[in-house]
Structures are given as structure tokens and as C-alpha cells.
Image 1 (cartoon, rainbow, N blue to C red):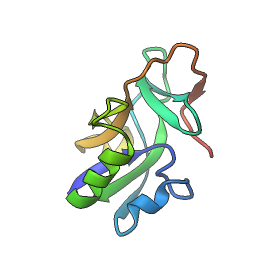
Image 2 (cartoon, rainbow, N blue to C red):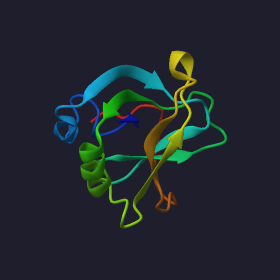
Image 3 (cartoon, rainbow, N blue to C red):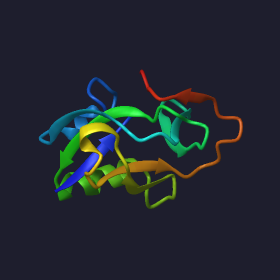
Length: 119
């Protein structure tokens, strides 16, 4: 099992939330400062941002291995669109080792969305 931080279309109510069917939501969480969301085409990408002081808001999920394989396909990890890697959380989950999808594409010309994605 993997604890996965989701911040975009996988969140509750998001267009890809059905991919988390059968998994367990732990709750709403925030990353530590140093990250922001950029607008892509209908979805966000999480990137490092030294200027950020708020972190990114999202949900923490407990994901089984089969679901994680499906999510890696959805997120394009094999194509280099995203990389699943650790991220630090703030608050009561600060000591947890969790993963998330980090956007790997260019952010040139991309609008910064700040710390919250709303579809």
C-alpha cells in the first residue's frame, strides 16, 4: 500500500476521481511550502516553486499496488509527463512518507494556479 497525495483531477469530485474507486481517503492535507500548481490543458501540474509559502492543498489516499499501476498509466509516467516521487506534507502528516505526481514538462508560458485546483 502507498500513501498518495492527489491535488487535481483525482480529488473527490474531479473528472478522474473514479480511478480511485475502492481506495481509502485519509483526509485533506497540504504540502510543505515550496510547491505550486501550473495550468495545463484541463488539469494541473505540481512543480517546485521556491517563492511559494503556502504549499499545495489536496487529499491523501491509501492506494493498493494494482491501482498505483493504473494511475501511473493515467499520469503518463512512462512517457515522461509526470514522475511519481516523494513529497513532504505539513501538519499532522508531516512525518509520513507519501508520494505524488510531479509534472516534468515545461512550465514556460503556463499560468500559475497557486495552491488549489478547482475543476
